[in-house]
Image (cartoon, rainbow, N blue to C red; front, side, top):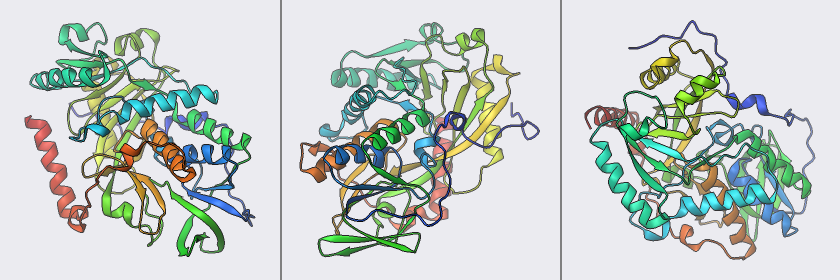
Length: 424
C-alpha cells in the first residue's frame, strides 16, 4: 500500500539539528591567521580528526568549512557504525571497518566526547528467503576474519529481537555501534578548541595554487593564505578545478531519512528489544534505528540526481516503514531530510595524495562515521611522518569516466538495481 503524506506537517531538516549547542553565524571581515602549516578543507569527520594530531604536534592548523560545521554528510547521517568487512579481494583492506571502529571508540573515550555511543549490535535483514543463504556464507567469512561475533538468525529467532514483518531472518553483528552525529562532531570541535585550533565556517576554498614548496589557498574568491600542506577533506564535494581527483574516482548520490515523533516504550520494544541498528540485504537498502529519545529514524530511497528534497521519495519511505512495521500505522513523521553518500566504483574509500602532493580522503560509501574518522587520523600521521596504516594508502581505486555520470547511465543503473532488488 502506498501512503501519501503530503498533508502531514514535518520539518524539512535533520532530526539531529535540535542537539546543536554551538552557535553558527556568518562573520564579515574574517581575519585569517598567517604562518599556517596545514590547511584542512572541510569541517567534517575527516578534517576534524586530521586536525587533532597535527595540533598536538604543535603545528599551526587552519580548518576551513564552506558552510557550517556538520552541514554535510557528517551531520546528516543516522550515526551507524557498521562493522563488517569491506567487499574486496584485497585481504589487507578487509578489516578496515574493525580498525576504524576501534579507533573511533578510543578517540571518544580519550577526549570524553558525550555522543550517545551505544554498542548494541546490528542486524542485516533478509528481505527474501534466498538471501538467507548469502547471509550464512557471510557469517562464516566474517567470523573467520573478526572472531565469533556474527550469528545467523532464523525468522523465529528474529522474533526475539523485533516484531517487524516481511523479513525472513537476519545476520546479527555484535560489533556494530551507533552514536549521535551532531554530538560527536561538536565533541571534535570542542577538542580542537582546547588545543587552540582555528576553525572558520562560511570560508569556501575557491582555488588552490601550488607554489614550489607551498600552496596559495584562496578563500571566498577574496583572501589568499599561504600554507605548507593541504588536506582536502570534502568527501564528494569538488571544490576547485585543481582538485578534480574526487570527480575522477567517485560519484555522489542522495539518501533520504524520515524521523518519527517519540514512540511509546511499548512500541519501542516491538521495534527493537535491544535497540539494534537494522539494514536490509537489498542494493537500495533500508536502514533504521531508535534514537536515545525513542524516535524511529528510517532511511533509504537513494536518488542518483542532485535535487531539492523529493516528497515522492519521502512518501515511499513512509510506505516502506509501514511495510516493516504495520503496527506503526498511526505514527507521525516529524522530520525528513536527505544526505549525500560518496561512492567509488568498488566501494572502497580513497586516501592518498595527488600529483601536487595535496592529501585526500573520500568515497566512504555510506560508512563514513568511523572510516572517515580513521582516515582523517591517518592523513595527519602521514604528514607528521609517524606510524600510519600503510594498507589503506595502497588501495587501488578505479577511475570513473564521464559516461558513468551521464544521465543515461545513472538512470539505467538506477532501474537495473531496482529490477534486481525486485527479482532477486
